[in-house]
Length: 255
Image 1: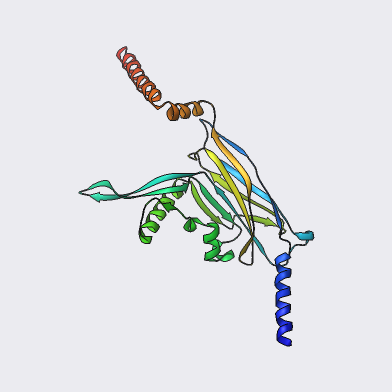
Image 2: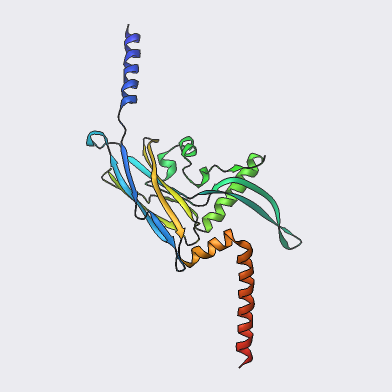
């Protein structure tokens, strides 16, 4: 009888926890549109928001927040350099079907302190958890090596980044984080995702905020010419080079 009562109590507790309302996130960003112009040297994006707990009751246990900003995915080829007879040449290469052009994550605490490896892999939390799919067959060791190479290159260019302890949480309700946008950032729509973490589990994941990064003015004109009218763009570039060379020769010849 006691065993039946215990089982019934456990089932009731599980049902109650399954029906327990979850908090809600109200995320936003400081800029929904970022324009790249000739003097663009980068930007700083502020991601902020509020955590709305059910019935307005803030839990006693600590909550953590991680924010992720992802750029559009594109295919990319990663080539490995080798030194042959004193000359660096291309060796092996891996073709990834899709890789984020930009990836930045910030968290309220170190990621390994707030989520386990399985959760981090599911949500791709951290540079070492990015899941890139190669177009062909490749062994696990090679895949990891080329993935680390791609991450390292983008990290040095400021296109990939990871920052722990940079999300400020006020009163377990308000949060804010700052992410750097480098001058070399590509165009496209970027998705800002906020994850609320408690007891090692992601209880809320909200990716409803989109940031548009685009070129304007003369830079946009040059980009469109190079992409849509490549032959005309190349011809104009050659003509302009010849004209500038002739003008330089004429100017120096008069001295």
